[in-house]
Each structure stands twice: as C-alpha cells, then as structure tokens.
Image 1: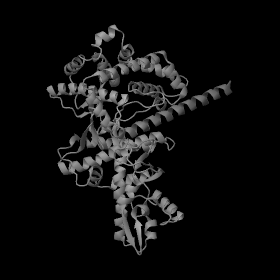
Image 2: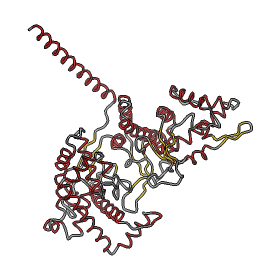
Image 3: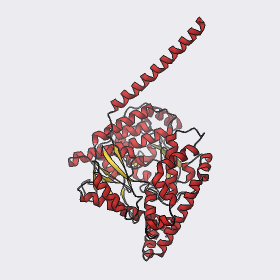
Image 4: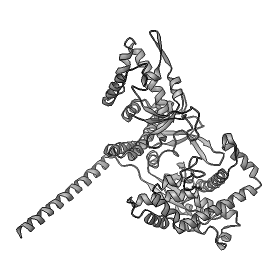
Length: 528
C-alpha cells in the first residue's frame, strides 16, 4: 500500500465506502489526506486518475485471461497520471488513488518489457477487481471519451483506413440486458462462468459505446476496424474487432445473420495441401495416404461422439461438454499440439494450448491418447506434416518463405518447422476463402464479416452459389465443405425472465405434486 500517503485503517475504511457507493465520487480518504486542496483540484486529480486507468481498462477488459487477469505497465500508469504539488510536497496521482480506489491489484511484477501475446500492454500481471466501480465508470463515461480511449485522441472513425462494420444497436443492447440478468442469477462460487459472462459483457458494452459515438458523429452506428495484414496471409484487425470478440457478442453486434464455416478447417486445408504435393486426391486415395484424415472429415460428429462417450466414461461431466473437449483436442492435434506442449498456430498467430490444458483429467487424456483410432490419426498427422515440410523446403520459393518466417520470429530470426507449417496453412486457407468470397461477389452477395475460415452474410446464400463454391474447392480436395449456422437475434430480457419464472413455477409445481403423492402413500399405508 502507499503507506507514505495513507494509513492501513484509512485504506480499509475507503474500501468499505467503495462497496456501498452508487456513483463514482472522489474518495473520502483522498479528501481527508489533502484537506486544503480545492474541490476543483480534487476533481482534476481524480479525473486524471480515472482517465488514465480507463485508457488501460477499456483496452484490457475485452481480452481478460484466466478469469479476470491481464497485463499492464504500472510504470506507464505512474508516468501518465503525473504529479501535483501540495504545500511543500510533490505527490504522485497514481499513488494517491491506486490503493484507495483500485480497479486492479498486482499479482506479479513485470519488467515492463512487451510480452508476445499482448499487443497493447506491458507485463505486470494484474487482476481486475471492483467490478461494480468499473461498471459505474463505464456507464458514466461519455461514448466519445470511450471511443478516444480505445482508438486514440482525436481519431476519426470515418478515416478510410478503417473498415466499417455496422452495429445492430438494439440487438446489442438486448444481449447486454440478457447477460447482466444471467450474471445476477449466477452463484458467487461459479467464478469461471461469471468471468466468461463478464468478459462478453465488457466487450458488448464497449462496442455499444463506440456505436453510440459513431451514430452521433456519422449518422449510423458502426465499429471501425483497422486492418492489420499478417505476412503469413491472414487479415487481422487491431484493437476491438469482430474477430476477437466472443461468438455471442459477434451475434449481438451483427444481428440476425448466417455464418458459413469451413468444415474442420485445419484438416480440410491440410488435406488440400497434401493432395497438391502428391499429384492429386486420387493418387492419395489409391496409396491409402491420409485415410484417417479423410475419415475424420467425413465422420467427424460420429468420431467425436464415440470418443467423448468412451474417454469420459465415469468422469461425471455433461456429454455436451465432453464432446466439445474432444473437438478442441482433435483441432489442437491438427495444429501440431503435443501432450504437454502447445501447437504451432492458433487464431492469433500464437502458440496454442497443450492437450494437458484441454483434457485436464489424466484418466481422460490417457484413454484418448491410447485409443487405437487416435493413435493412428496422430501418426498420420506426423507423416502429413513431414511431407508438407519436405515439399516447402524443396520449393523454389523457400528462400522467400524463410525470410518471412525469420521476420515473424522476431529477435531470434530462426526458421522453425512450426512457423513454416503455420505460413503454409495460412496461405492456403486465405486462398481458398478468397475463392469463396470472389464467387459471392460475382452474384452480388455482400459479406458482412470475414473471420479467417468463415464468412458472415445477412441472408442465406442460395444453394446454387454454395454448390459453385464447393465445386471450385473440389479442384483441390473433395473434402472441403461449408457448415451453415443461422444465428438468431437476441430476444428481450423480459422473455428470458418470463421463461425462467415459468420453469421455476413448473419445478415448484412438480415438487408440490411429488410431496402430495408421498403424503397420500403414507396415509394409505397407515390406513391399512
């Protein structure tokens, strides 16, 4: 604590006041500590603290990890808050408020060097606290202020450098209302669920603020997204965007839509590459190469269901959860995951999760890895990846690819097999999706959003157009297909509340009937 400014008792007393607060207000502890400071200066210094912290919070909240953790530069916060003179002393604004009005607490001090998986923060590990204060702060913050804190002072959303994604503000508000209601119904012990809900809520609230600003400034609500092309082939976006929000928030932003995902994309793309380096699909089939990969693409649901049933038998988890974990594990294997190490590429060009983090139970993991089909499947992936790597290294453009990989690898500049595979995968995935987008354009079908191996449209793509996309893809593999999901708009929270109350009444009635039947049986036994 900032003991040079406050006593432990003063800090504790302020924390009690914070818990009871219904609005953002200058902390009493600060007023008591600096009694001769004018109200104007008190507000000035407190607002400075809130401005600086908001600038960090709004950029961090959408990407919280492990519940409610993120990384910040405490040195940057100290510098940006600045100092003020009081009597004969010089005081840090950051130190004046960080303990009596905290928005996060330090878990692990960092060196203030940038870390690889965080594009906007430094590496002091912190945990978000005082969600009530953060909620009040965000609610009170003007949309224009939030926009500038996210995008930069005086940034213009109409700048041509931004792509515009129209926001369905009514639908987004319904999602916010529903999520706040779900959080209110969640038990305090359900920390993981609460963290998941809050993360989505923060994302939605920030997008809503941005939409309110762009609607006021430009006549309609949209989310400006700054493209950040990867040298590996994909198009990413900087900051808050449609790619890095949750699926639920994405549906809230866009409204009712249709999402088309490449079926088991990692294997579909990998098999297409494998076909191309082996004189085509027929050659592979005749030599029985890629048999298990083709089987997975043809029978993925049945395979996932069987593995979930057998691997999680007796473990006591919901079957849907088990199927999802098996799906994640198989996808991770497709990207090169090992038992205890991460894989070579995930949605953000970063090292992904190890199987130990997906299948946490040693019993489940052992059953999964010793399953005969999984063993054969794993062995086949090693063979496929080895052949793809040999083809890359023997290609006439290898030196060019190697240079891109060196630059991607940053300081060490190494050309690694995982990054060579990542580069080749992204290049081919992007090429195949470009083919689909071009066909849609030929038919005048606008794409609302593009998310790597998926695209979103506001109306269903006609069967004729879908067939043409699949036909064009079949030149590379007959196993590249599209899954379509119709995403409905969010219903008003009143509907959700009514359904919950109805279910509660039905359950209460069921218990009442069961009780009456039990009483009747007891009465009957006594009568006899």
